[in-house]
Image (cartoon, rainbow over all chains, first blue to last red; front, side, top):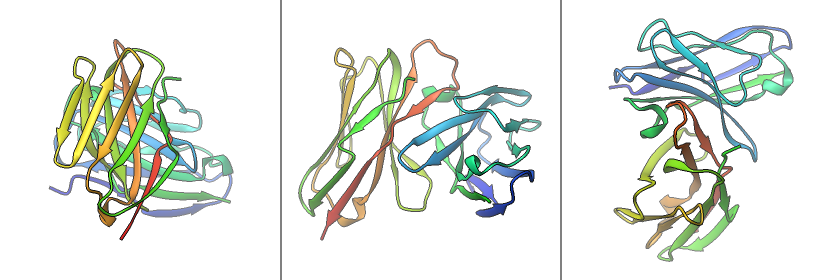
Length: 114
Length: 113
């Protein structure tokens, strides 16, 4: 199993551009989530999904959209990138019971918005 | 916010010594989890302790949970240079939806050979 994969590993955007961060898992996990990690801030939850077709907001959802059409994929869309979205983004998955279970993390995407 | 807070922010020790990190949180929880992050990498799950448990062990790791004080500690015994990493606690609210896991800001552990 590849586990949780994220693409791209690095990305530079200009303010106002849009892009999609990809996340996929091959473990048939129902629960997937997106976090951002900023220096000195720990990880903050952006959006999460408890199954295909079901998504909900986390702590910092503004400026981001998600959808979950399949169990395997959970893309994160930046609608109009801003410098404040410069961060490292992590995708995670869990087999069931969401936050009540251990999370499996991807390697991250480092995003810079100029 | 439910976010946990780790203490200390940074810890520097010699190989062979024990390392203790603490985590405090604010509300009732279903479970508390500890993760390790090596520089430039994703997080790796270490231990999950549920609110009705007081202590758990995994290899050289020992985690305690005191729900009356809303605190947890992670002890790494006989530390090695390879234990150098950031360590995060994360809490899941009791009674919340299944989606919300709140992370602290982490303890940076450095183990010198």
